[in-house]
Each structure stands twice: as structure tokens, then as C-alpha cells.
Image (tube, rainbow, N blue to C red):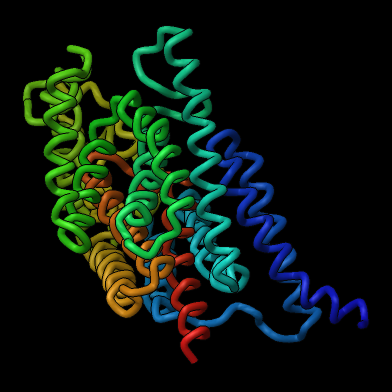
Length: 391
């Protein structure tokens, strides 16, 4: 076997390892994960040049991704701060994760192993974070990231885990370990006190109940009841504050959203560009608004403000397409425990992400989007593997 042929056979495995390493380390160091991401893309380009062909295959999401790229570039050209907006288009590079996962997660064993290792990694990290929380007497759980990002990542992993516990054909040993590992991750999610992640998790669990097993909805109600019966008073008050418009955190968000809509009204078509909002926000905010407006704590208002109505509609269409693709794979492979569990978990996590994004700028959060694009790619990969097995 020639060296080039050997490398061609091993390259998907190399990309697979680099992709997993990013997922496992990003909760500790975004810098290290970014280096791994850069190495992964560089190797992909080198491999493509060596093979004299583009190795990434197309997906049903391609045109939506291209439309998103186009509107980012157009709005950067018309932005209030063009250089900054152009620089921020780098966030679209993360979409390549979808294609890398589709290319390198090419067997059931790889998909199953990657999910188990991800769940193990986040559970072990959660145990460490919980220990730090109690020994340091922190008000909210976090160590390496902000509590909002930490809460969002825990939410995604929890929702990815649940469908495996519900499928009758899933291996009993796998169910046992996922159930055991779910506990510290869920407890860590609670301790982040991130209300938007709590709501995202509850909504994702509700979606799983509707699509898979209505008993999950009963479990959801039990979880809420137990929380209000046994949670510390500070957390109960935190939960109640979700519906309190006069809570300081809520007042701040309402100010940001109101100011954001003023900015959108002044730039309704192409927005102000994908840049930091601070300088622009300071021009439009009310005199009694103490917020600084680096972002607006809402994905949808941020998209209206930065990309305008055209960009907003394009991203919403992309979101809808992602959801319908994941639902289609779920229904097509409902009898396959791995395929249906991955698709349902990814769809629930995506729904949770959308709810979380009503109160946070999680679409602009690097760590969160690495996980989201990974779940999208994993769903497409499991479809390809399952289809290959059928044919």
C-alpha cells in the first residue's frame, strides 16, 4: 500500500479525532479548541489539494448556508463599521463542522463512541464544577466559561442524552451509563442559575415528550414540582423571576430589546452589520438605560439589528430547514435506536437552543455553536450511515 493511499484511508480518522478533541476541550479552553479547529481545516485543505478534488460532500442545507454567507458579506459591505462586520463573518467558518462530521463520522461505532465520550466528558467536568461551586461558595456555577455559556452547553448535552433512555432497542448497558452520567450534568445545569437554559431544557424535554413518549411530559411536571419543593430559596426566587417584568435583570433586557428595535427601525433592510453593538447602542439608548449593549440578549432582535429584515428571514429559513431535516431523519429511522435517538436529541437540543436564544445571544456564542453545528452534522452522518446499511 502506497503512503498516499494509506493517508487517504486514515485521513477521516484523523479528522474524527480532531473534531472530538475540540468538543471535549472547548468547555475548558476556547483557545485550544480554536487551534484544533484551525489544524482540522488546514489538514482538510491539504488533503483536498493532494487528492485534487474537494472532499466535502453536499447536503440539503447547502443553499441555506450559502444564503447566510451572502447576506453576511453584503451587510458587512454596508455596515456602520465594515471592517469589524467583515471580521465577524469568521463565525460562519464553524458551519464547516457540519461537513467535517459528515465526512469523518462514517460508522455507527464512531457515532456511538463520540456521543458516549462527549457525555462522559461533560459529566466529569460537571462534577469538578460542582465541587468548585460548593468549596468556593460561588453564587452560580462556572469555572472556565461564563455561567450562561456553561448552562447552554449542559442543556444541549442533557437533551442529547434523554432519547437514548427512551428507545426500547437501545443497549441496556448504554442506557445505564447515560442515565448515571446525566445526573451530574443536569445538577450542574441547575446550579448555573441560567434561566434561559432552564427554559430551553424544559422546552426540549417537552418536544421529546410530544414526539417520543408522553410520559416524559409527566416527568417534566414532576421535575418542576420537585424543584419548587426542594430547591434552595434563592433558586426558587430565580425561577419565579422569569415572569417578573420588574426584576432588575428583566428590566435590563427589556431596555436592550426596546433600544434594539429602535436601531432596527433606522436600518430595516440590511441592518447595521454584524459588529459589536456598544457604540451604536449608546447612540440610541434611553437616558435612564444603564445597559452598555455589547449585544442585545436576544438572537432574533440581534439578527434584525445586525443583518436587517433580509438577513433575519434568511437565518429563520435556515433554522426551519435544519429542524425539518432533523425531524425527517427522525421519522425515517424511527425503528433504529441510534439514528432516531441522535435525530431526536439533536432536534430537541436545537429547539432548546432556539428558546435559550430568546434571552441570550447564543447564536453568537462560539462554544454553543460548535455544539449546535456538531449535532446538525451528526444527524446527517447517522442518516448516511443508516441509509448505507439499508442499501
